[in-house]
Length: 275
Image (cartoon, rainbow, N blue to C red; front, side, top):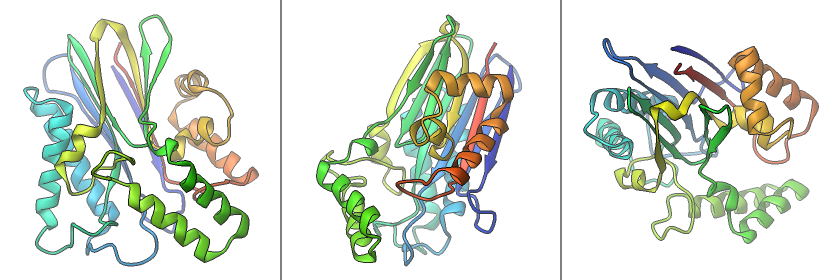
């Protein structure tokens, strides 16, 4: 068993809004990992006095503890309980109904001698290396598949640079986040029911060699800069380590304009070799 992880803020002058941790039991052949990417709200009020770093540390800690200690609960049930616990921690002081209340993308996995379970919510990613060496990406593609009208707003904002166009795009995306009718995409915020929307699954323990969890600041190597496919990204981390991937992303960010989103983003990578 080997676990190697790195997390780095996109801007050293701002707090890192990612979370990464792993736990191994005192006895037995098992473990759990959690990676979160806090959603940076647009400038302005989000209804919370604590902020995104506080939120991801509370949610991540609760999810890791439950994933490791409550084997009688599914990972989706663990996430629901962690969301509820975190909401209770600031319900009395903050407006949890605010559309910009702190929230995060989620990757969670756990394993024992028999099974490897996974959960992915929103645009962080989990890569599973199978026993035959193939790499399976576990992705929640809903954020990448926004309606054409919203993508057109994004393109217009990028082309014109006008604040009004940017604000229109932000409002459209916010209207789709955690939409109750299932038309949008989902992040972990204050409603435990969102856990049921996560991408979940499992593999026999004998079918899995390695897990690689990444926030979208690290998956830019594949999804933004097109430097290689998922198997290539996995091979890079396996050969050179998580730090090498983040370094390559930072180099690309400095050399190639980012079409959408931040020029530099928080980046987190966790490699867990189970064999």
